[in-house]
Length: 463
Image (cartoon, rainbow, N blue to C red; front, side, top):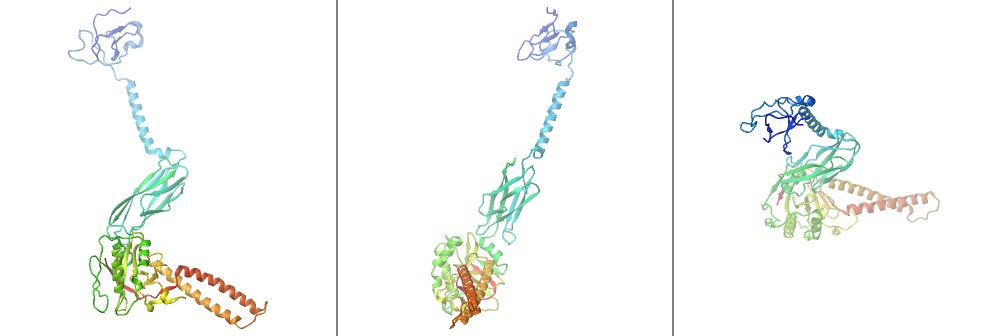
């Protein structure tokens, strides 16, 4: 039976009349959305148990709403231990989560983790020595073997090495930028490091390239040093011959830089070198003027070049181009001049006078036939010259062996098994091996070589 009530109590939350539960000694709100439960003020039945002194909510006086009738005051509720426990557990879970995020690479079992340092790599041409190589490090911060490889989204950038494995320690990767033919400006690239089964694969490394100088200015700095001068839209103050006619360059605003292969094909097909060199009439300046104007007319950007030679009053003229893939290239199409030609086994008139020129201040002026020049760098010319010297040495040795063989067998009948016959066989075998070797060398070097005009002292380039 319900305990008689002398007063009407209302819910401290919603204001509705509370119901009384005699078994529990509690008042409860009949509104399901509220469901507030409080102990009945003024005491509870004796058999209500420990709940009779438990207060779940603290009363709040709301003037004008509750309580409506006079009656005993609501008991004040004390802060519950449960709420403190919940707050403590929440803070603990948050701290554990933050710590786990920070230390998660150390907690991942038996899988590699990619770490890159630094996070960005920068190249520039400010030093005057081109874009110097840069490097970054790959580290395995996890467990197990990291199998990695690199992908790059820019044609001007490459990495060495580009793949590998890493258990622990650091793998240093060298990045190099090929800036030949690239216009001034800022270029971006992404170097992506992929790792097989790595937790955080892939990882991106940002690469920035900043160029201030034009392609030809960079090439001059790298190849010619400080004793070179560059001119734009300026006619060279030189004459084409003894008649006093000034060099007249005709430029094409639509002309562009082309690739090495394209340039070599153009030079071979051009007719400039087919005219003979004639002292005091058709000289190097005229050949360079003709090739320049022919190239510009064909849409290829060209320069007229003058070089000063040490100890000589008269210099030399040639042409320069900037290729899109191999940088600055010098071309000398001066026609037949037997005074500068070294011939090996062919008539002078059979040599092709289209030549790649090698210009470096303080070094001999070098020439290699366009058909046999593979690179524009002076290092290539040095190696080519050394190979030509070996070829000439082998050729001289071959001729000496042939003379010795002819002297041994000429006009004589050799008896089989005799010492003379054995010596002849050995000489013949050595001659045949050397002959094959000479043919291989000649295939790589050609049959025509040009003497150096002298040591380059100063260079002027007119674009």
